[in-house]
Every structure is written in structure tokens, then in C-alpha cells.
Image (cartoon, rainbow, N blue to C red; front, side):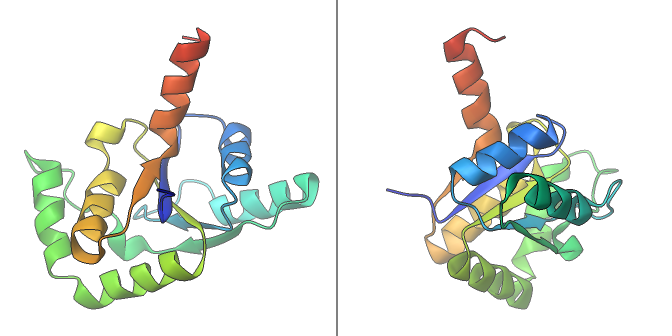
Length: 147
């Protein structure tokens, strides 16, 4: 079954590699869920679109960022936070259904990422599927012997 949406961690690969993965998977929108943007990913994607001929859009949804990094169990606190976000979850679901999207956060490791917690919540609530491009790249690199 083809995933409804994708996930990726910024910093786990170069922007050029991420952009290639987005193109390879026919992704037309990047949904950035970081609370703050160290760099403007939207501008970088527009620049890459111009150089490589892609049409990948950008949307920042900072209210899905994880404000609980000072807590002992960051992901548990974040999962509780998501339970009270009915309207926001519905908005995100509509975006994911309309456009082939990739949700990104600033955590390279999928097992510690809040993008993965958000994906699990979306799957539980709406029954939609996802795939993590960061994990897929790690598996392919190991298979090819690049690590």
C-alpha cells in the first residue's frame, strides 16, 4: 500500500539529498513542524525548485512543534499535547489528503522525533499510512555499504 504522507528529519541528510528523495516520491509539499526555523526552508526549497525544475511547496505549521524538550519524557508529553488539537489535526489531515506531503522536523533520529509521534497520532485518528524517508535512506545506505 502506498503511504498517504512521508516524514523526514532535517539534518539527517543534505538538503540536496532530501530534495532528491522528495522528487523521487512525487512529493509536492513540505510541512515544517519545527517551533522555530534556524534557516528558511521555504526559501531553500524555492531555490532548489528553480535549479532543478521541481514544484515542491512549503508550509510552516509551528503549532505542531514540540515545546516539551525540558521534560523527562519529551515524546509522552508531546503525545498528550496532540490529544487536545482536534481542529489543528483536522487541518493537517486535509493538507495531507489534498497534496502528496512530507512532514519534517529538526530531529535526525526517527525514534526520538516528534514527527513520528505526530504520524502515529494521525494514523490512529484517520487510518492513514506514512513512510519515513530518513529511515529508508539509512536502510538503503546500509544495504549499499555506504555506512
